[in-house]
Length: 140
Image (cartoon, rainbow, N blue to C red):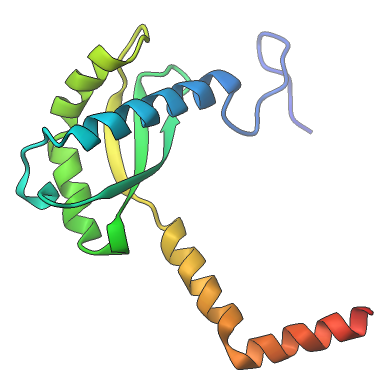
């Protein structure tokens, strides 16, 4: 059974509303900054990046940004390029958002796109489809 914290509140299982709002604020601002195309890194030249989620630490000083290059190509080099440009991006972010602290940025590859693609391929397999249909008929 979870114990209450020192403040008498129950511990949270996930991020607070404050963290979620800050993460979305950072995500939207970073999308606009990346759209402007001012980042000068060879790995990011002519690359479109999807910024799917930003998770902010409880103190709002650190942000992990989940990214996927369009088509999933060269994900490792794109993430490395974004991490090289993180200080520049943080500087631009500081002017774009109204927060007490501008969080440090860490970019990581968003594996959820690969996972969704894998599940889609599995569900498209004729053997799996046959099992799913057999299960649907048994439930009727």
